[in-house]
Amino acid sequence: MSTLRVAVIGAKGRIGSEAVRAVEAADDLELVAALDRDDRLDALTDAGVQVAVDLTHPDAVMSNLEYVVGQGIHAVVGTTGWTPERLAALEGWLAAVPGTGALVAPNFSIGAVLTMRFAQQAARWFESVEVIELHHDNKADAPSGTATRTAQLIAAARHQAGRAPQQDPTTHGLQGARGADVDGVPVHSVRLRGLLAHQEVLFGGTGETLTVRHDSLHHSSFMPGILLAVRTVPTVPGLTYGLEHYLAGTDGTEGI
Ligand SMILES: NC(=O)C1=CN([C@@H]2O[C@H](COP(=O)(O)OP(=O)(O)OC[C@H]3O[C@@H](n4cnc5c(N)ncnc54)[C@H](O)[C@@H]3O)[C@@H](O)[C@H]2O)C=CC1
Ligand SMILES: O=C(O)C1=N[C@H](C(=O)O)C[C@H](O)C1
Image (cartoon, rainbow, N blue to C red):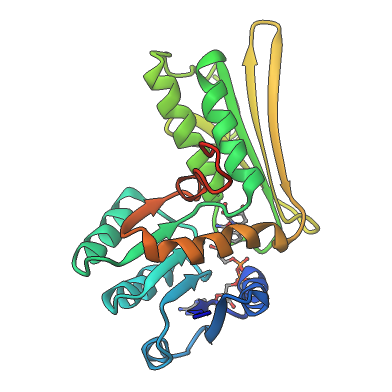
């Protein structure tokens, strides 16, 4: 059986070190490069890498991907900090090297992907919605990539259903008390030692509320999604945004 030659960039980090172990443990994958800060990206081409997994930092990911994609190496990206402009830049790099694929996944855990889907489904039925994301105390970015994507999906579903934008009733208060505004959805970020990655989506209607909650309790929660992505990305040229697009049909069903 031929193995897929894989690199992890950000290999010494919290999720990167877990990804190194997961790739090493997979019979059909071979970890041929494990890079961290100050390592030369040339090591990827020297090692004949076919798929590179980026788990670094929003400040580092774009230059890493420009190199990776430019070399025709497929990319699996968990690093956060994505904006429409960044996605467009990545699409441009991919277009210049036809046949190369990249998956950008705000979250690799199946429960988080389902949370986003459930939130999207519920969005049109409720007047009010707020997102609370809770993470460990070393997280560089806020709101989280998952919360940002969740809010964007909710906002799009509300818009599609013809729902008016939410009105904020606050007339008195402290700056920031109502969270960040992501496409009209308030997103609140908690940073707390002891936590890993958690999210609640709170919906409110007349006389009722609905809460969709997900908890990642260990970095192992992201590994099945990362391994699936590594195996799939060589077969899907161009940019894919969201692991849900790779989940469709993997178990013989229509997917998420
Ligand atoms: N999509 C998902 O499911 C998940 C995404 N993440 C994201 O992954 C990223 C990393 O998270 P953590 O592991 O918690 O951070 P971390 O700070 O523990 O690890 C990041 C690693 O990247 C390294 N690094 C920084 N710049 C680099 C560069 N230019 N080249 C190579 N390595 C570089 C650092 O030295 C560090 O070892 C964050 O953006 C986080 O939000 C984290 C967990 C799940
Ligand atoms: O930094 C983290 O830990 C995580 N980052 C991703 C995000 O910002 O959504 C995914 C998950 O929440 C863990």
